[in-house]
Image (cartoon, rainbow, N blue to C red; front, top):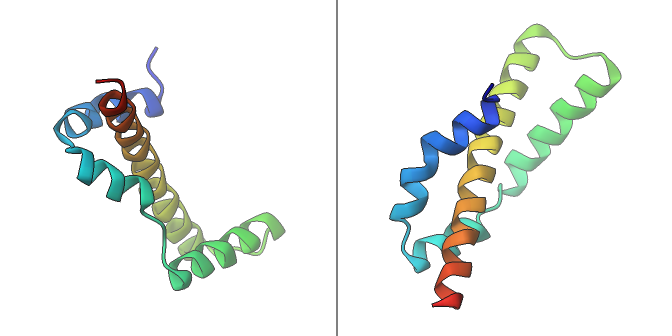
Length: 87
């Protein structure tokens, strides 16, 4: 049975194969800006403390979903860069 991570990996595989080395480098370097990271941290604290509202939880889950997509793409980008070094 495929997990959601497995499905995401398979869905994004064509994107990973289409990355140029330069695009892969930029993707690997991608980080949330300070304001976005602060918002994520605040929502995480609320969730961990059990004080998160339903609207905040929905926002937090959306941000985590986006972060997961970016993480999968970054893993694919690292593979592109390793393949480039091996060639």
